[in-house]
Length: 171
Image (tube, rainbow, N blue to C red; front, side, top):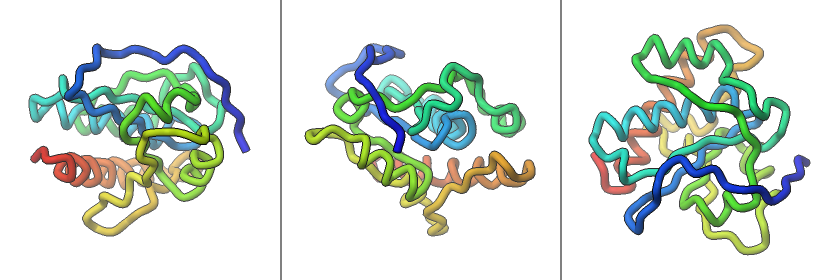
């Protein structure tokens, strides 16, 4: 099981009482969670509500800390008009109280997050795929597969983003 230590939280935007904080999580933070972060940021920007959100992504493991997203993930986003800018990081203890929603990609991520979480935390831990209207709960890791896996993930992240925003009262 990965271990985490307290660290200084990154600040990407000022927070206000009406800011919803969302953290997307996968294993290494170079494929799925970075794509989910990029798709979500793009969606809220297109809706004109980006000031209402603080969005980031992280990994449960430290394998890729400081690295850019996987080139195939970045290329898939670029082809779909979605900008992606991120450096991989690992989940921090503070994330469990800083973020309102920690949305992970599969059951293993969810188990790891629950194991890593401090005794008291305020974030809702949930699989992002639970919002998929097609019922595809797992956002599969495309890392060792062909490009088609990244395309599938992009479509699924888009569906989940729309449904998650709708669950928060945004269309």
